Image (cartoon, rainbow, N blue to C red):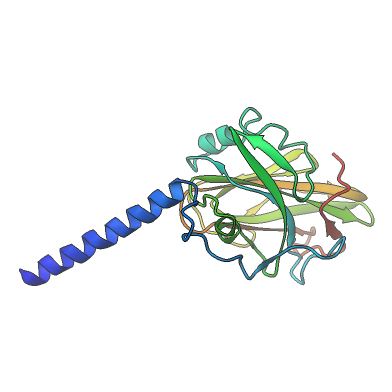
Length: 236
């Protein structure tokens, strides 16, 4: 009986701690000491442009501070990203430090470059004392191609749900509570035009870790690397 009582006490204490962490995060992650240091894998870009990594992953993005959003089903995500909820997010090419008003909050765009294949949104948000759970993250980048690239596919992964656009056209969406898996979702064949091509995404997280990754694949399924990435000079 004593052993059962101890086990129950530990379980209740653990549950209380989890609920407290969830409550703190639900308040927007602004509990002061709850915020961690900047992620070691995220840095501010120091050059005008960069190349994808050896596996073709795009590592430079502009990321908007998170917006409250609840639900990972297709209907819930579509509601969160509709124009009334996120005005101009499907057309704007922001600059680092630009701010927008969303649902009564002033949010800022941040230029981020990840040293990994994926961009860790959890660490991004926590370093800014922002919410990480029940959150919508917008991200955008500009891919510059030296020549037209036909029949490529955008291949992505995200934790959790995400929707993706290339040059203003929606090309892929994945939904539900999922982990980031490389090439978890792959678009139909598309054409990257010569010059700038705008890639943007909306990632919705429920709770816990959140991140995303993206690259282009050629018709044979090999990573595309013959382009550069910047955070400006986009065109729709």
